[in-house]
View 1 (cartoon, rainbow, N blue to C red):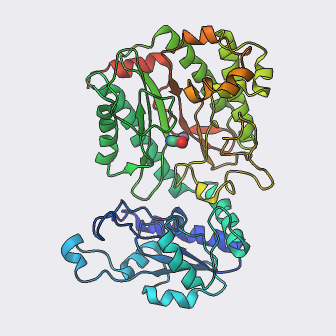
View 2: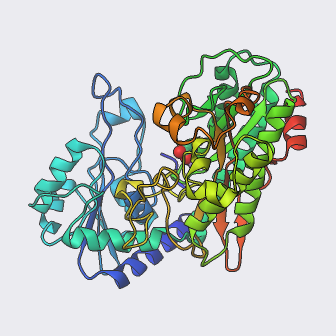
View 3: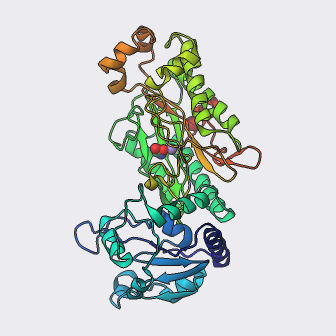
Length: 462
Ligand code: GLY
Ligand code: MN
């Protein structure tokens, strides 16, 4: 585990986070980090990532640990590693040393945790085995994190309040993740010329992230089939005429994420049809970025993206009608079937382990409309919030060939015209946008998105 150079900053930040939490709730809290899951034998495990709620208050990616928070106090619960661990994993900092680094008041072995379990709130970790231990220590059932009750619900709401708006330490990390992600995308573009398969470009991009001692914040999407929204296949050969969609983001060693998508032509030159649709998506992207500021409803940014995409598709002769009517009848969603973005922080879809409790303002629920139901964030923007803006255009066979859709939108889509755009399977342009006091700061601004710059970056030799 990497210990940050400036522990004092970390300890101060964690102290401030605890103080803020103490102002919002008047009961104690236990948060667990979680444990590794074995692949086949205990020492060969899936990569470990602590619970983000734990990480927010503990600062370091500790394993098999718990923290107890009460009125601003912090206690660390963690066992000393067994003597054999030094042989296999080298020397580890002791729990006492870790407690010092994170500014905890004391460190205790795990056996002591049960004594803190009465009337104590938690947010369970995702691993079901860990959840059984948690229930035992709290001496009660624990509801799933997306449906908390009683004090767990109060805790969840308090943590959402804190994590919705990022503090200076979080922003430093988020900016580092963004900056490495920008370099990864540039490397991916430059690697395209000599690449034969999607996997070659993925390797070039992830190697930048790994070489900065970071990891990927989510499974990379690097594909010529951008119409498969979360495509995790990398074996397709690259053909001249293909567009390559890369949705790749770094995560810092303390767990903070970036999430960026660019789409570029494998040949280094967009075809005229690709250019036309790319510019529609780019217009939506730019219009949405310009709208981000405190007080603006995120759903209105989504609807703006829908409107600009509908206008662009009408101009290209793909959709027929008035753009506002088309959005009203969800015709844009035939080609833009997801929300315009989401919260970003310690997780790529930040706090989505809490269902819609973080993404949706209290009292709001998901729409049943095809064009709005996938929206993950429906709140007014506030200063310090980090969101993605990621409009797209996709030709998804499952949507466009669906009998009901075909019937419903028979006269709205110019199907013959659409066929001319067959070389555009999927385009998405995604940036990470911080809400500032009076507007926005695009953390990923240094990565261009206009056609000329993208073509130049792809044509650069590695
Ligand atoms: N980066 C993948 C997503 O936002 O869903
Ligand atoms: Mn995203």
